[in-house]
Structures are given as structure tokens and as C-alpha cells.
Image (cartoon, rainbow, N blue to C red; front, side, top):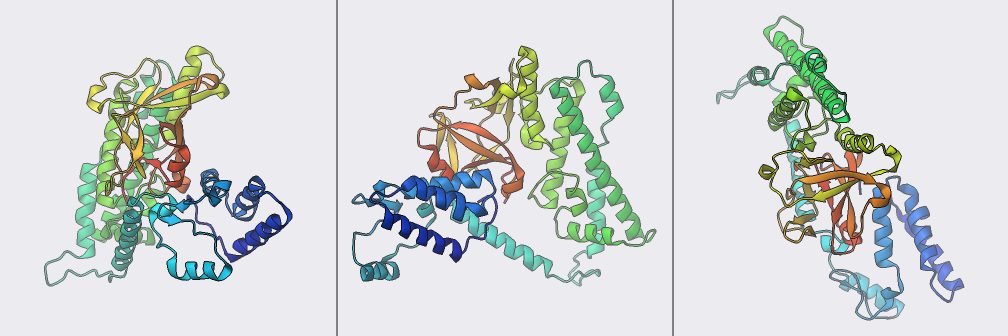
Length: 417
């Protein structure tokens, strides 16, 4: 689920009662009516996210049909439907023979359990770290005090930070305000805001550690976050969703700056855009639509974005396409991309986030959008999913799309746990 829901026994009880009444009053099971009641009213009444509704419908479709009564039918992998028996027999089956829960039972890949346990472990260690005393003094073992550690770290970060982008100089070089140029300028402006916040907060903390300023609550929070190697909340507020610890977060931010430096140097569309490096990737995807619409004088509301996973390596892309754009840097969770077959396949065990090849984005009119044999794959900024949703890319598949819906397959802009 993208959002946690408070499903409860009341939902189960009313669903059971309605099912009983429908079965008593109909000679043929009204599957469509039951699916609507369960999926859109009883359980679905809790669900506000469209992708979660899609998941719920897929569960209903896989479970509720006449095929349920076929001999040898499976509720799910490793979960056969028991043979017809009396009430006592069903009670005994549930108590003694019900199979153990596994990810496959719910349509998930075994990697989901690895991911779940890893996340639990990380949460536990994070909580233990937060319970450590906030000591200020250096220890007998020679370990740096919290203040000395933060002082050293802030000096290192300040030394690495680049200068802010000269927005006046960049704007003066603009010959035509194309959608792509607008995205570049917006991204440079957002990066300036982040760099300014980081620099000012670190310089303020440096003065506080010297004794020139009184340590405020904001400084204390910044110091504690740096000591815990987590991104300070003050920076997160003007940054982008990320699950990285502070050290790799800073390195990642500098790489994002590098892309913007290169892009803003000539304001031409890069040969391939590192989409996860943008503050607002949706604006770039909309720019692809706007650029094609302007070129062909098509109405924007009649346009659709088509995604094609290429067979190219990033190094093989030497120039941007004549229409659309190349993007890269996305990871797949729950499945993998088969480069030879040109379609989505089952994931490889323990390969949690395989990177997919560069994607070609192209805008077409809605009537020419070929989405046959495709899975509408949601794209998220982080593993948290939910509010980090970006877009839905069409990914080629040779199997029913419902398989990948149940498996929770998605594209992520960051593979951090």
C-alpha cells in the first residue's frame, strides 16, 4: 500500500454478512456486485489513493470468480483451495493445515521479505542510536566530542559546496524561453535556495561553536542531526525527498549541482537527463509534452507521454533525440527489465533494485499512444512511495499487468533503503 489503512474486523464482518445475503438470495453468484461492495464501499471506503484502489481491484479480480471452485485451483502460490468439506472440516483445516504466510502468497517477490526485514533492522538501529547520550566531552578512547565532530564536518561540507548559480548572468544568455530552458532556470533557482540555506546554517553553527553566538534550538537540532549522520530538517524543508544519510546525501547533492552546471552553461537540452537529480522531475516531463505541442501546434490536453526503455548504454547516447528526451538513473523494485527480451520480468533473488537502461520519452497525441501489452508502472522519488509519486511510465510486458500490480512493481529515483 502507498498509504497505511485502518482495515478492521468491522469491515470483515459486514463483508461476510453481505456475502451471506447475496448467496442466499441469488442462484448465481453476482461477482461484479460483490467486488463493487467490497472494493469500492466496505474496504474501498478507507482507500483514497488511486494506485491502492488499483491494487485492491486486482486482488478482488484474482480471488473472486467462478474459477475459485475449479478442482486444483490455488488462492495464491503455495495456497491451494481445500476440497469441499463440512464446517468442522474447514475449522480443522484453518487450525492445522493452513499454509504459512509467504510473500508469494500475496503476489510479491521473495525480495519483498528481505526488504521488509532490512527496513525493520534499520529502524531498530536508528532508534538505538537516538538513545545514545548527547555527550559533549571527548572520551578517554580519543573519540571526538559531539561539538568537535560537528565542527570538523561543517568545515568539510563548506569546503565542498560550490558557488551559487548567477541567475542574472544565466538569464541574460537566454535567447528563447523554451520549456526546457524554463526547467533549467527553475532548478538552478531551487538549488541556490538549498545552497544558501546550508551555507548560512553551517556558518551560524560555526559561530555558535566558537562562542560568538548563543547556541539556539535550531543550532542544537542541526548539530544533533550532523552527529547522527542524518539530513537536518532545516535542509530537508528546501531540498528534495531522500532517504540517504548525511554523508552520501551531500555527495549526491554535489552531483546534482554538476548536472545543472553543465546544463546551464549552454542551456541546451542535455544528451540524457539524470531525472532523479531534479527537484521537480514532473516539470521536466511536462516540458517534453509542451515542447512537442509547441512544435506541432497541438493542444496540450490532447497529448500523452510515451516511454520506451532503450537497449542503449548511457555512454552510447551522444546527442539528444530530435523529439523528446532521454532520461536515466531509475531503479525497478519488485521486478527487473529484461534487456534482451525488451520487457519486464521476475526479479532476481537478492537483487532488490536493479537499474534499468536509459528511457526515451516522446510526446504524441492521445489517439496515437500505443499502450497495448504495457504495465502502467508508477514512478516514485523514494522507497517510501506515497507522496513521492511522480508519473506512470508504460513498461512493456508479456504477462498480465495484474501480476506486476500485485507484486508492487514500481520505478524508484533512489535505491536507498
